[in-house]
Length: 449
Image 1: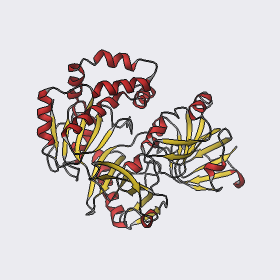
Image 2: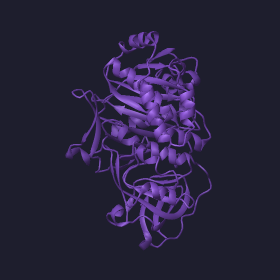
Image 3: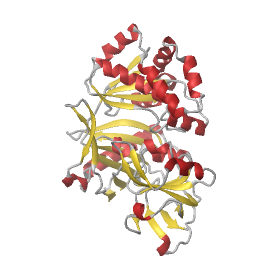
């Protein structure tokens, strides 16, 4: 076991992704200059030793190669939960745990995660709000087990990858007033910086819920195009009383109010531009403002599947009567026509979906032809059921969430929140109807075929 501190101003001289994982390696680099929440990274060999010492090597091999990945993950979770760290590991972890201020965030940092080719966005567990050491050890085991969840295994197979090891990032958790994700530059327009934000923890944005969208065209002239969502109705916050993260309703007066001030938008834009210059490539950055308006960098990784091609898709000439929606919130150029699969509503708290039809059955039925998924939001739980989607329209969220990142890596045409041409689109459109999505470098349209 090796442990390295995340501390501002501490030089990180020797990059070692195999030891600290993608996320850990990036955060160690960032903490030299930027305000990153303090903490430490536990090396990937700790996971390997845990597996060997508990006699889990053959068990994991046989479980992963089985026919039922959901069942296998359930069993792996139980097996990890009943396994233990050795006394030496517990002693060393206790020393580091006692040095940082709770509540803590325990985050995955697999070897291939947050790289320039594969993001692994949303594939593994992140445990927030840890205040007790026993819970900390349990959270480590949950994150370890998530290396073998059904979504992660499917992601690896679709990308031809293998991820046998994982490090852990442990940090003091920022319980922010507002947070979000920024792309520098925007994936479809290298002349602007894209910022998406909401109230509370960044989980709302990365989980594909409603958010505010800002396009920063120039930080000097302060040219910003704002798209404020009045549907920011949920926020995730750490509850000291319950000692866990809870989802609560955003106060009515804040739902239509911008989650970031103009000054904060510009501060985020300048910070992510600086990170982009440091890495020398387009960057995806998670950020948070605490109650004192201090900006923290929570994560940074290269943007995967980015398109700046000079070649431009030509949108089909569709009559106004057939256009269902238009949007500038786009990822991946392309045109696809096929049957619709409609998700009418998403219950994030209970992880339930209101579907027009049987989602699993339609996913199999349209396996060969593909289909267009239309949904208000795109939480990670939905992703495992829509593996055969060829295009997606999310009516309420933007383009920086985990599902959008993974969709783009898979070559799926993605359309974020836009202007719907018909009222109550999700209630009036039925699964099975033939529709189309077309996206060029500037905008996308959803239309009837």
